[in-house]
Image (tube, rainbow, N blue to C red; front, side, top):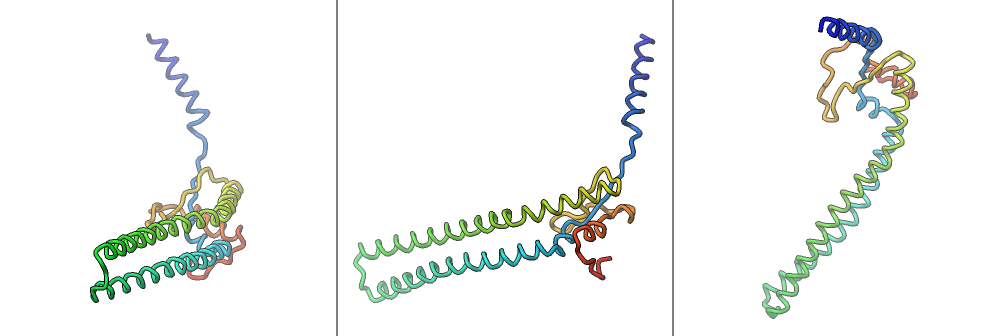
Length: 181
């Protein structure tokens, strides 16, 4: 029993000596800040704004058509120029138009999200490659994002020398803004 305990302690010490004492260096950066200054990300936002405008214009045309149909229906109804069958038929047509508009709005939102992902993928790949490059060249084991996408800080304290944001921006060829140094 005593021999098993000694062997267990020796095995633990050997495991610690090979893995437990390895140097871990953790760095951090503010991905949102870097993205905000990447020319490629700015181009993505401009492209998305144009695409969103086109989708909105198409939807607006359908909404105007539905509004015209509703106005016609209201005028005919107030003038008592609709038979019960015509009234019911026009109501169904208006409901169908409303459903089409809702579906088209949801589809437009989905298309916009897909377009955003499609356009951002190469930008994010470039950013990740530069993060990997900066991390390796500076001996970091891990790089964490300083904030969440909502701007809430997740790194509450860290050595200033472990903040790679400036190094990352330099590696990407981005001029560092004076207010964020």
